[in-house]
Amino acid sequence: MPPSDDTAVPGVSRAIEGLDVDQLRDAIRDEYARVATNPKQEFHFHTGRRLAGILGYDERWLEGVPEESIASFAGTGNPFSLGALREGERVIDVGCGAGIDSLIAARMVGASGAVIGVDMTPAMLMRATESAARAGCNNVRFEHGLAESLPAPDAWADVVISNGVLNLFPDKLRGLQEMARVLKPGGRLQIGDILIQKTLGDKAKRDIDLWKG
Image 1: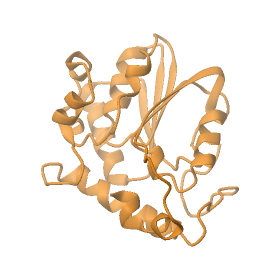
Image 2: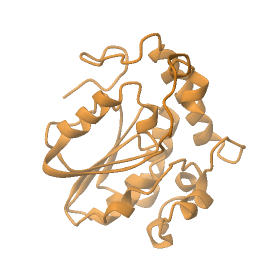
Image 3: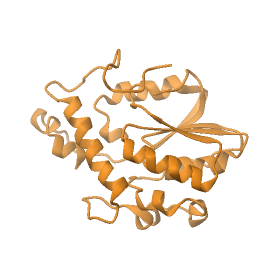
């Protein structure tokens, strides 16, 4: 099984020359730790139940999801709009945050299915784990790890979901390769994310405030 920490990840290419990847990850952790611990403060992005409504989440999906996870939701899309998950499927949620998508997925796949939520921010993982226990979800677990080195075996998942996280990968190709590695042949990739419509210059690509902003 690949390593789940970010101190030494063999094969991870630091794709953008001059970008301090460790500093970037620390800045992202700090930002989303605040979302986890103090979701009512103002951020430069939408959060919480209002955001879920904007993104088209069915209110029925949120039934039984603890309010603490809903409040700390900070996605950018709706991976379930690409198709409902099926009973018995295995799912990996890359960048699971406070666990809202993982908990929705756990209900969709039922007791015969399984969900692994992966995140690199301890405060988010704590929130997600507490919410899963409160919701009585026994078919989901949360792991500390990086998108570029997912803590899951080859060809384990029927579906990989991710919401608002691909844009934060320092090495997007490596992250997508990892998603492909953990997917079964014929598996599905359901991503909600943001895009920019113009090419960024090298200086902008190294600006950590722009990455997390």
